[in-house]
Structures are given as structure tokens and as C-alpha cells.
Length: 169
Image 1 (tube, rainbow, N blue to C red):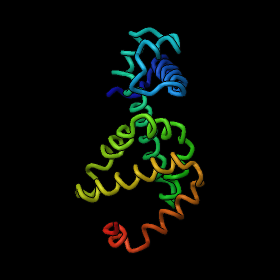
Image 2 (cartoon, one colour):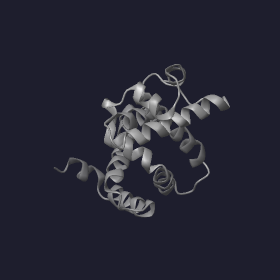
Image 3 (cartoon, rainbow, N blue to C red):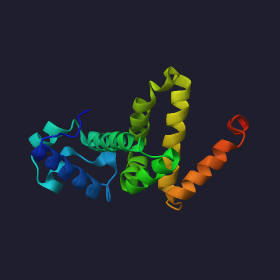
């Protein structure tokens, strides 16, 4: 997987490609979109596309990775980590909505990469990324709750008897 470039010209190309893909995804499914479609939509060459991304899906994965790293940098300054989580992703909800509708594994893979070495406990890491990615995915589909409401809902759920809820079917 590629990453967002620090070179100004490359970064501009990546943004143009991402915006073109977003426009295309209003009418097509991700698995139907070709590199040719994206290049035609935004007016960049195939060479420019492949210099920046491996494939069409990679465009969304790279953008999500960029925003996830940005989230991780900014969250250290915040007191209420859970509220900040929802506030941050609310601001980027269009990307989350596209990903959850088109290829939810992009979200899960990104979060899993960032939680893999968390506390050197693979079970805790898996639990964290599973819960957070599921919350984001479900929230992006409902589009009803504010970040504050999501924080309250999550705290209420997590403060209940978590083990009992987990084992309840």
C-alpha cells in the first residue's frame, strides 16, 4: 500500500484522484470502478495514478490511513478520548460511509494494523479494533447520532455488565 506523499505535486494528484473516486462512487460500486474511470474523471494519466496508488481500492485505504494517523497524533491532547474519537470521525464521516458501503474490510484492516501491538495482548487488541470499527460502521449507516450521543451510548453499553452483554444472544 502506498501512502500520501509529502511532495506537493504528488499530494495534489492524490487529492484529485481521491475526489474523483468519491464522485464516481455516487453512481458505481467500488468493485466496478476501473483505473481508467478514475483517470478519465479527474484528468490524470495512468502513470500518475500508479505512481501514487496500487489500485482503485488503495485510494480509499491510503486516505483512511492518512486520517487515522492524523487522529492518533491529535488524540494525545484530548481529555475525553472517547468523545474525541467520535468527533474526529464525525468530521470524516463521508469517507467512513463510503468505506463501510463499498469495502468495510478497509476500515477493519486499518484499525487492526494500529491495534495489533497494543498492550502486547492480541485478544485485547482484537477486541478494541472490533468494537471501534463496528461502532464506526454502524454509526455511519444510521447517521442519526451526534458525537456526544455516540459517546454516551458507548459509555452506557461499556459500563453495563460487559461480559454478560458479550455472552447474551
